[in-house]
Length: 138
Image 1 (cartoon, rainbow, N blue to C red):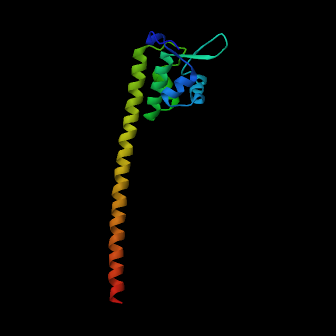
Image 2 (spheres, rainbow, N blue to C red):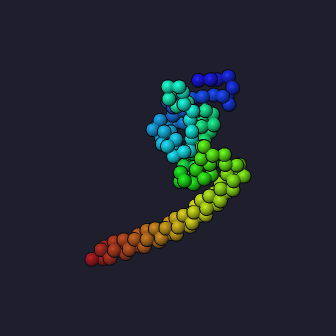
Image 3 (spheres, helix red, strand yellow):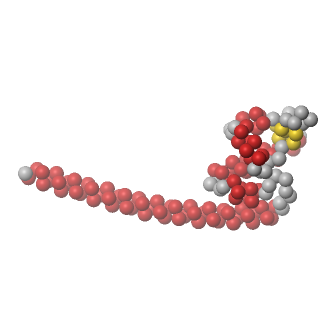
């Protein structure tokens, strides 16, 4: 692994997996999907660059934010294409706005659910109280 220039730094799959807390299988899966494109040695071993590492970090961030792999691919571009930065930003803004709207709707639904649950809870407490009072009179 080269350490002199961070831009020229390379990683074996096991190193990258350990650094990013993911399995080598997952890294190969992202390669199969075209999201990263590692170089190959003469012996056909994968060699990952700082660019691959950065792309994997973007994929992980996208997954954490709830984006699908297809959405992530559109936002960061496929590894073998030269998607320009403006297109990447436009896609990211669009998907980000959709995700924010989804979150707002979920929050509203959760707030309604909370109100319904609190109302049911209060009704049950009142009903229990009434039944206990009635039982005490018997």
